[in-house]
Length: 187
Image 1 (tube, rainbow, N blue to C red):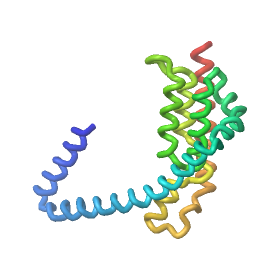
Image 2: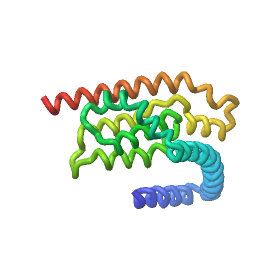
Image 3: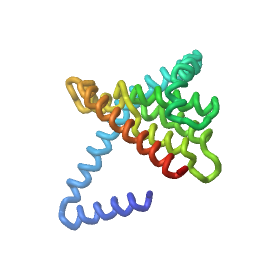
């Protein structure tokens, strides 16, 4: 992947110089870097806040309680036995995704995937986890709202109804497809 980016940067530099837009290219690079830092700082603050909340939930034992509460839903989504550690990580992953914290959900999803994997083959449960994590139903689109706020949106959370609608559809479609393929491959 690094060589692809290297080729793209080199090609854009050559084209910028050949077409006489070298100065514009330099200005765009500096402005782009400045915008990237501003964006990262805006998202970083929100991510730190919610990652801290997730850590507090873990240390206080609330994530274990959350795992118990979500056990009926997880047992429907994952009909094969998954184990206590995987269930806890899936529950925490789902909670982070519900809060719109994809960055905080990723390590939890990876930990759950390690628990669900069996060698080099993808299990039905692992495929279902990937679908669930990718579709990630969200109640509070924290990252999207942080992006909107960093770009000056007057009401960054006014996207909530659209996020709820699209999240529900994507999760439903993804889980239905995973269930269908599970039956097709076993049948």
